[in-house]
Amino acid sequence: MNTAELLVKCLENEGVEYVFGLPGEENLHLLAALNNSSIKFITTRHEQGAAFMADVYGRLTGKAGVCLSTLGPGATNLMTGVADANLDGAPLVAITGQVGTDRMHIESHQYLDLVAMFAPVTKWNQQIVRPSITPEVVRKAFKIAQMEKPGAVHIDLPENIAAMPVEGQPLPTGIQEKVYASYRSINSAAVAIAKAKNPIILAGNGVIRARASAALTEFATRLNIPVANTFMGKGAIPYRHPLALWAVGLQQRDFISCAFEQTDLVIAVGYDLIEYSPKRWNPNGTIPIVHIAATAAEIDSSYIPIVEVVGDISDSLMEILQRCDRTGKPTPFAVSLREEIVADYERYAQDDSFPLKPQKIIYDLREVMGSEDIVISDVGAHKMWIARHYHCESPNTCIISNGFAAMGIAIPGAIAAKLVYPNRKVVAVTGDGGFMMNCQELETALRVGTPFVTLIFNDNGYGLIAWKQMNQFGYTCYVDFGNPDFVKFAESMGLKGYRVETASDLIPILKTALEDEVPAIIDCPVDYRENLRFSQRAGSLNCPPI
Image (cartoon, rainbow, N blue to C red; front, side, top):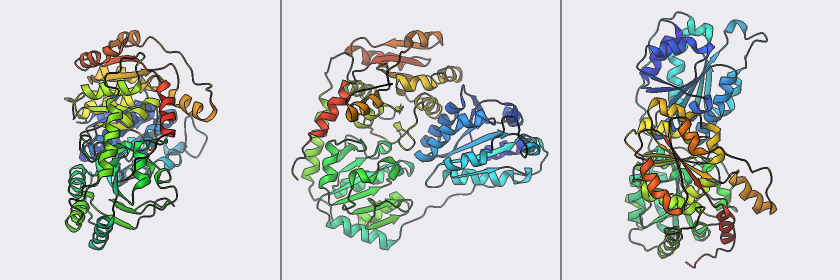
């Protein structure tokens, strides 16, 4: 047995189902070992796509997704997806091939110090310098990647080490025991919540990672406290719940801004500061905060909790609930605010203008998708509309990158989602800019048998940057481009292609495309004049009285 074969045995021991990546000269021994393994290797068309697949796999399952590249340009291509997983809190293990240790001390073809390079975008990384340490390196990598807060780790395997003979066995994986909050912090939180007259819950991605949405919903319902979720906290409470105030996180004022302006206590549950800076909802640091999470609060001058409840989130919520006497107190402000939010959403239901307004596209998409179906959002102007208007009944049914916020994630992410949940409908929602960054992975999707729909918001430009330029300068520059015929593009790859030509086309096209047995592309023209109209309305928004 050589080192590469031992490493693959360790991956099997960790329960790895897939490795996403590209073959290369310096990872030949790993590929040979994988060829004789129960693990399925998914050959991608670009290393960035491989990393995004591992990223979304990790976020959906809670188990580390694994991606593989060769050295040099293969490794640098991998970095964007690795950084995305790290900042989005998704467990990921990246493995790179490397030159032999016998030529690292000299100038060498394609050699880069990958351990140094990956250090800023990972929780931990290590080069395997001796065959015998392989089981320890792999076990440590998975443990660190999956422990709270999850993120990316990196293993660098020199080609001469990979080929060396070795004896050894994978290490036992063990069970990570839950950590529970102190009764002192739980009691203090219960007192603070009981005293608050107008509290609001801010639910973040930590609720989703901890599988704590049921506990949060019961907590909010019994204490009658409204809930706003971050972009990455969608589904933390069902969107139809009467206390759900939907998403917070836009960089402009919105209805939900009123709730934070008039609250006297924010109960931050599983909230990661990277999701939405507290300086945007607590700029002066004057709002009292109760922090409930699996890890201690990050330091920020606008986020200084009066109480930190650190431990298993579901347990903490239930323990606080038993000690808090807020049950039955009315929240009329939250009720009236929700009515305004819902009315704004529903006003686009019958809009028949063309090109379609982004609100209408998302409204129709929500109508077609089931409660457990999955939307993967790319990054761009459409992401802001998805964040605001696509609402979730269940956790992990709308995946948005909002830590690193990398364009190009949607199509690779949809492949991973379909591998994890083959019986669910999956839609990758992307702008035309993001689509062209990783559209080559649609060939991967066809080859591995993962039919999903790619819905393109087509405006022939970088819409989000144009929106920001107009807000700041009153004009746009360097944001316009041309596009291929997306329907012909789809057909040339053996996919299905559809073009929306009237507002009434979208729902029937979506229904048809979601039944196709191959990946499908829908080209949907979008009217992004709505971006500036929203900015103008947001600037004149007046909050209702409490």
